[in-house]
Image (tube, rainbow, N blue to C red; front, side, top):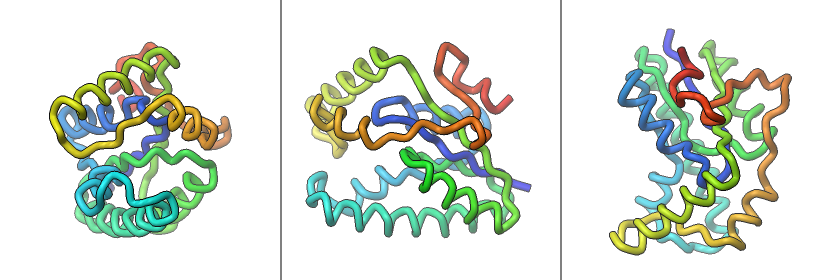
Length: 169
C-alpha cells in the first residue's frame, strides 16, 4: 500500500527541497500548498483571505492525495504542518482511510534557515518568479506560530546533520 509523508518544519527549513529529493530519489509525488496558492493567487491577498484559501487548497490537496494513494502512488505533502492540531487532523484523515503516514520534521539549525531564506529572497528578486519573500519580521511571526512535534507524534527527523533521505530508509 502507498504511504504519505507529511513534511513539518518552519518557513525556510527546506521542506520543498526535501520533497523534491523524495520525488527524485524515491518516486514520491509531491503536493505543495505554496505551489497551488502561488498559481491561483497573487502573493499578497490579505491575511484573512490567505487563510481561507490555504484551507481550501489543503482540502483540494487532500482529495488529490487520496486519489493518488488509492492508485498506489506514494505522496509527500509539502505543507508545513506548523501546529499539532493540523498534524493530528491530517493524520486522522488519512489513517481513517487505511493509509500509512510518516511525519518528517525538517529541522535545520537557525543559521541554515536564515541562509535558505536569504537565498530564496535573492532568487525571487532576480528571477521575478512568484514566491513568498520572507523578511525578518515575517519570519519571527511565523516562527511564533510553529509548534514542534512532540515525542508521542512519532516523527522522523531530517536535516539535523543527517542525509535528508535517511529518514525514510
